[in-house]
Amino acid sequence: MSSEHSDIDTPPLEPIDEVTEHEHSDFSARCLAFVAPLLSKGNWEPKRELVTRSPKWGLIWRGDYAIADLAPRLVNRIMCWEGADGKLLIEIAVGQQRLAPPPDAPPRDPGNRGTQDY
Image (tube, rainbow, N blue to C red):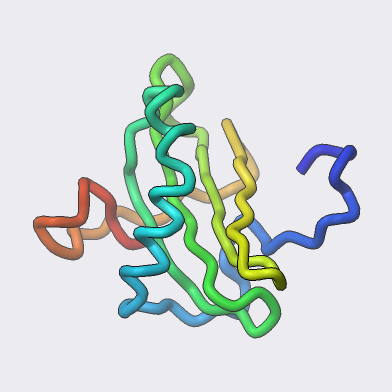
């Protein structure tokens, strides 16, 4: 996160002490709709997504994306969670070397828009 917003407490980029949530398609859909303009402008290709529950932040959606012309070994991740006021917040991490890419997993279902679980 930029230093201009260093006062905002954000979830970690990698799930820590969080429980995987499988039944939150509404939350995933809200987050995907919220970030869709960014994804289409940047021509980002979805790779994986995961929804977890944190005791501190509640539901957290994390989506990993491939960006054309950026090294494929780097992780590009968008996180989405709900603020105390009920509004969605996001954090974007592009070209992260410190993040381990999640292991490949089979698609959850045919309607998952090409995303996979972590």
